[in-house]
Amino acid sequence: MVVIPVYAAGFGIYRWTINRLQAEIALSQESQSQFYMDKLRSDISRIIKQQSVLLNDKDVMRLAVFPEYETDIDMVFAINRIKDRLASLLDISDIVQNASIHMPGINRSIQANGNVTGLTKEEYEKLVNQTTGSSRQLMLNDGILVTAVASVQIYKGEGIYPTCLSTVELSPGSIKAGLGQIKRASDGGMALLDQQSGQLIAGWGTPAGDPAAVLSLLPVGRSETLSAADSPSADMQTTTELKQWNDVMYLVTVYRDENIGLTLINYTSAEEIYRPLQRYHPYFWIFTAYVAVVAFLFLYLLYRQVKHPLTQLVEAFQIVESGNLDIKVEYEKDNEFRYLFTAFHSMLGRIRNLIDQVYKQKILYQRSELKQLQSQINPHFLYNSYFVLNDMAVNEDYENLAEFSRQMGIYFQYITRNASSKALLEEEVQHARIYADFQAHRFRNRISIHFEELPEGLRGLTVPRMILQPVIENVFEHGLKNKVRDGLLKIYFQSGNGSLAIIVEDNGDDMSDEELNLLKEKLNSEDLDAESTGLVNIHRRLMLGHGPDSGVEVGRSELGGLKVALRMEKVYNESIDEISN
Image (spheres, rainbow, N blue to C red):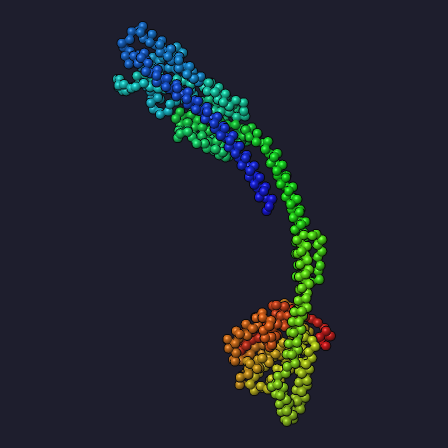
């Protein structure tokens, strides 16, 4: 995160520099193209201007308008003078190869090279149509550029025609030589095209000599626009792009002049033109290597100074999380991590002290609550049991009297043997069954009890002591207390996937929905200082012994009364010897 932005900034500066230089190279080629087209346009303007001056010459006007008044000798002298003026047009620019003036009045075409040829009406009309039928200053005649300027028009015969017409032919060879002077020796070239026909006028370089090859630089292909220069006017457009042709990438500048109707293509091999930029590549790779070395050193130091001690500290916390508080991590360097490791060890010491002072005290407190709960004997249950014994003795029911007194001995022996907080599930169920039988004798005309037999596979399981009998006692004291008849109590077991549930249900109607919700809130409360007797005490002991998913769940029974489920997710298997004391 630190090195990448630095490298990105350096790479961005490098790419910006390269792109800037590429843009400057593109602008240089555009300037080169614009210089040539400006010169060509200037030459054509001077030629056209001199053509206009020539048409206003008195000899030209006299022969064009009043040829019938001229004698043969005067006409010859006039034609010779016109030849001299035409010859002067050849000196205007090195691209002019011939100049002519076409005069239908004398049916002659006079040329700067001294030739005087005949001119028919059809030939003149063709020239006039080519000249007046287009707004362009140039015409393309058999691959040769021609400038044409017509004189003022007069009515004559069946139509209106210019009295005479001046044309100047531009030399393709001279144009090619001019392109060569501009481009010189390079892996590329320049080509001048006619916009209307797309015909190649002149070209220099490779593949400028091949019209098809030059035109192939213009088709749609893989290209990247580098520049679109602001044109001097709406008639001039310049674009520079990278174009691929024959697996070679070219920097192509296309200059379009709508006024004279010409397009100049200036192209150079990108490999050649960008060769000077390659001298920057070693600097970039040096910068890359430097950043890589700095990044490696930075990461190495970061690992040694930060990551490694942090990993040690995280591993130490994981060991502590597993329950081992006796770990000690050595750190020899004298820096900020030394303070962290010292504070870590100090924290472990304080945690151990807290466990000794708080956690163990809490365990002892809960155990004392259990012992207190075990030692509690409901006085009503005690004297009611004696009333039952007395009734059996008076009625001489000695068989039931003996069994009942034996069960009372087992019952009181179980609740007073409180050295261990755990018991076998078989013993816990037997104790609860004895209590239920006592209550069945007491309420034999009002309440019936359905106590499911404990499955054989569950008898050896170890559970917290005194968890089932208090729940059954709670049913008789609160749920079925006011039932005068048809009372029902059900106790059954559910097990599977390593878990055990003891379900106690009744059909009592004393508990309202508000009281049931209040009981749920007490069971779900995390306040350890709250009242912890009865169901709350059992709930906490089940969670402590069998995990946070264990405990007491209460709800409305399908019988109409209260449903209490004692759920244990982790069931201990311990030998009887471990809990017999």
